Image (cartoon, rainbow, N blue to C red; front, side, top):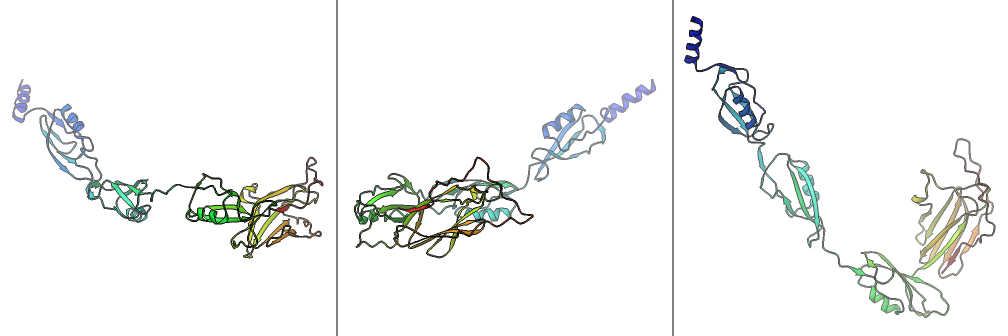
Length: 356
């Protein structure tokens, strides 16, 4: 009886039963209030502070601390995060995108997306940014840009010049910002100094610097110093009883050799192709101004040379009949043997280049 009386007196004097304060740090404020209410505690005052580590509206500190024994009904005060510290976004309007990118990489912000629109200002000039300059944003925020894609290019189309005189054709092409390549041809019965064919066809959209060519039969009195000749043809791989590697070099009037074949697309597993005897290696539209040398190598040994000069109708041809692929040393990759179903075609003509 005495114990019961003491318990009633103690509860009345001290204001309720004892409870242990739960840990609500890291919880959203609403969740923290529910947890406290479940054990009979009330949420007290809230103090809001900036914090980079704790998300906004989450509890940073509580008083009393978790684990403290208090009477039910006690208020627990909370310190709540307002989120990360906000800083003013820098301004990049009018700057070049590459400069803004370099600056952002060295700051507390991150590069966002980039969109381009046609504009009269130089390409990659920053027209707008999001968020705008001086907007308060958190550290690590992305900044997105709208930049100039450069002026809208005027659509230029290839005019129809076939049948026009040389002067008329040159005038029609003069202001198109293209590379004009006249091609001299000797076409019997064709009119002199009149365009006979054009490339590309009329109406095709042209780009800056694109090559535009036309064929013309020049009279003796016409002067067109940049006119070129054009040859097309084929080379027949000689018969050495097996597949061989063929290389073709072109040397123009500058004297600099350029690899014509094989090109990157011709390689197989990183190696030059091996061609069986009688294979036709075709060539089209090889242009030259005054001199052109075409060299054909078989297994690295010069086999045949064609030399064009000026307006000759047939090339000077030399063939090294003694040139034959040497034996492959031990340790190197052996050439594939000619398959039975790949015989050399002795009927194939061996004058591969014919100028137009």
